[in-house]
Amino acid sequence: MVVVAMAMTVIVSADSSQPLIMKTVKGKKMCDRGWECKGLSIYCCNMTISEYFQTYQFENLFAKRNTPVAHAVGFWDYHSFITAAALYQPHGFGTTGGKLTQMKEVAAFLGHVGSKTNCGYGVATGGPLAWGTMLQQGNESKPRLLRRLLQVHLPMYSWSPILWSWCFANLLAFSLPGEYEWRLLLNYNYGATGEALKVDLLSHPEYIEQNATLAFQAAIWRWMTPVKKGQPSAHDAFVGNWKPTKNDTLAKRFPGFGTTMNVLYGDNVCGQGDVDSMNNIVSHYQYYLDLMGVGREEAGPHEVLTCAEQVPFNPSAPKSSSSN
Image 1 (spheres, helix red, strand yellow):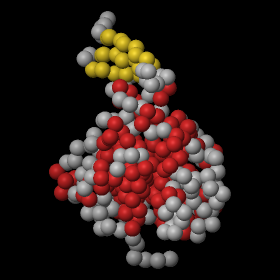
Image 2 (cartoon, rainbow, N blue to C red):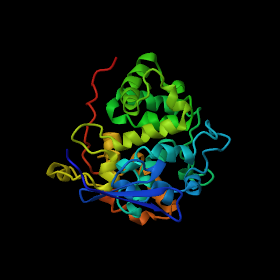
Image 3 (spheres, rainbow, N blue to C red):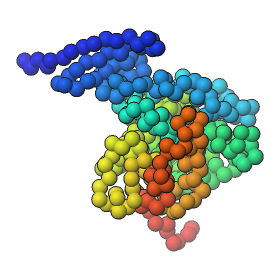
């Protein structure tokens, strides 16, 4: 029998209803913070997301999501986000590093979400960046966008359907042009996501469209999970867990927000210079940093903030020269 020496301390914080359980196992401090960061983890010894990102900040970031033109009024809320994030905080989501790094990661993740679900425009109330998590069903560009994503290197866009489902319940059904493409999308995205979340999304993709917490879980899972073996997740690329190889450095891939775009979107956004599609995502991240009180100056220099000059991890297949 092997006995592992373990010391345990229980602390009840004056400003939190959750007891902090600290244990030292083989010289390493590990913590359990109750429902929000449950299970012994080095990350649970840090602040939890609800301690530095609260309801009013979520409302500030997504102030227009419950406007009359939204298609899911009252569906997406702070509670759903925190409940979903609780599954991943023991793994470092929003709990890696000090408070600054933690806040920046939440801003980065939500920056992607906001940019992919935005229907704002230059003269919209609050400006174009204030309209994240809300799309109009009548937006004619969405069916074309979905068709393009299905036709061009589908694996690189496994992130996107989860974000689209954030906007309103019937976006996918409205937009997909045919049963074959619908099944192709389900098999890749919902199959892998459902297996990870232990939910049969392949048979019931509507679960994500009906359950805000589940949709958030799916999006965070994509953020935390590498697209391919040997490549970083967006999380690891952002917080610095990923250490670039010599080839990565030559490809101008560095830890930071820019590489999260490379991981999630590949050459649809990256390696094309300062294109609008990339700048839109960057602008949302900077905007959210400002609203959270961090400040966009903490976003880093251009080569870290953007992927303008990065070589994609997974280049798209070359387009066929023949046409039907």
